[in-house]
Structure formats: structure tokens, C-alpha cells
Amino acid sequence: MPRITCASSCRWSQQHFQSSSESVMNGICLLLAAVTVKLYSSFDFNCPCLASYNALYGLGLLLTPPFALFLCGLLANRQSVVMVEEWRRPSGHRRKDPGIIRYMCSSVLQRALAAPLVWILLALLDGKCFVCAFSSSVDPEKFLDFANMTPSQVQLFLAKVPCKEDELVRDSPARKAVSRYLRCLSQAIGWSVTLLLIIVAFLARCLRPFFDQTVFLQRRYWSNYVDLEQKLFDETCCEHARDFAHRCVLHFFASMQNELQARGLRRHPADRSPEPCPVPEPPEDLDSGSGKAHLRAISSREQVDRLLSTWYCSKPPLDLAASLGLWGGGLSHRAPTLALGTRLSQHTDV
Image (cartoon, rainbow, N blue to C red; front, top):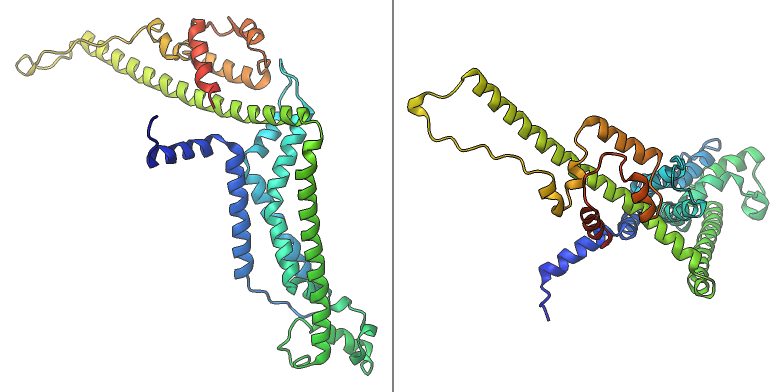
């Protein structure tokens, strides 16, 4: 058996994570969750302790960062762009399946909601945002210490509850009671949400094998196909652009050499050394075995623009036999069937 070295195993792991979009997205999701914990732990919370601003500050700090983290999760997830492109693309020769779009949307939302939920749960379990937001909304009749205060004094006192260093509420048993009540309520909500999420995840994981997996496997397969197809198309475009640029540069130097020879601009006979014969560009037929003949067949800007427009407006059907019959002579292909089969064999081994 061949010996597996550490370098080969690391290389295999790197290729696996690069080729698996789900693994990459899961890694980004965990990274955003870790960043969320770090941000919350380093955040300096300062409630304004004003009746008209406490609720705005507390709820804003509870909901605004999760919304920003949700947008970051959407931007970091490549499948969100692929999903929108699949939803908005023209039908062409390939029908759009709403089930695939719904599957991709649910996958994107699940990963994008991870970091916002972490922030909200941390804020609820900590309780500072909840105390600041709802300190002025507490019913004073639940606490006996407010019996000798006027309504205006009660509202001012409740607004100062989050600020334990304020002179009005410093060392006050009423402030401690109100703060303890709101903090316990916040933690109860946080733990209830956490338990609910765990139960939902547990039921989804345990009950899924009892249902038919055919539709799920089909949608998962075709959602991965859409992502991989776009990646392979981008890689092929980069390969063609590089080959096209290389050939244009070679043609430029060849034309300049012919022009200098036509004008008689040669080097001095004393400094002349035996000039090597120009190496002609290999014909396209000789390069068909390497899988590039189908790229060399597209050799003008008009053909490239037509190819890109056709790819966007009318993607080929998901049937290789029908696709060959449909696009066989559309762009003056001269590549044999062997080259196409070689290319497909290289790209389907994922």
C-alpha cells in the first residue's frame, strides 16, 4: 500500500475544504459566531439612564448588531449570490426549479442567522440590555419600596435603575430588587430560546430519517451542481482568457518581427549571430488531446461576447446528448468529441 505522509494528508484536506462549499460556509459561520462572542465581551455597555432613551438604547443594542451580523453572514456566503442569480436568470433551455431555490435560501438563512442568534442569546443571558430597555416599564405596585414615592419620583427612580453608581439609587434595596427581577426575566427568556432551538435541532435531526429523503437528496445535489457549475465556468473562462492573451502576445511579436524584416531593420553584420528559426504556433488539431482545442476554437472578441451572452441568457439543458445536439455548430467548434469527454472527466471527479 502507498504510504500516506503528513504533507499528502494536509494537501488532501486543503483540496477537500476548497472543493466543498458547505465546509467553507460552515467554517465561515463558526468564525462569525466566535467574532460575535469576542465583540460582545469587549463591548462597553453604558445605559443613558434617561426615561426617554433607555428603551431605544437597550433595544437598539439588542437588535442592531444582530442585523449587521446577519448582513455580514449573507455577504460572506457565496451561495446567496448563486441563489439570486439562479432565481433571476432567464429560463432559456433549462427550466428553473423553485424547490432548489428554496433549499438554497433555507441553507443560506440558517448559516446567516447563527451569529445574530449568538449575540441575542448572549445579551439576554447577560441581562444588561434587557434591564436598560425595560426598567421604566416595571409595575411599581410589585415592589413595596415605592409606596412613599410620587409617580414622577418613581419614574425617575426606575430610569436610574441600570446606573448603580448614581447617587439617587446607590445602595438602594429597591434598585437591587428591580434589577434582579428584570435580569431573572431576561435570563429566563434567553434559556427558553436556547432550549427551544436545541429541541428543534434535535427533532429535525432525529425525525428526518423517518421521512422520504428523495426530494431532499435531489435538491441538495442540484444546489451543489449549480454552485460547482458556476465555479467551473469561471475557471474555464480564466483558462481561455490566459490562453487567448498568450496567443495575442505571440502574434504581436511575430507581426513585429515580420515588419522589421520587411523594413530591413536588421542587426549589424559584425554583431549578427545565427538567428534561431521562429517556432511556429502549434496547430489546433495537435492540441486537441490536451483538452484545449475547444478553447482555441473561440478566437475573436465577437465569439467570446456571444458565448458569454448565450451562457447567461440560455444555459444548456441538463442533458449532455441534447446539449451536444443543440450547441454542436453554434460557435464553429472544431474540437473532437474526445476533447469534450476529456474535459468532462476532469471536472466531474470532484
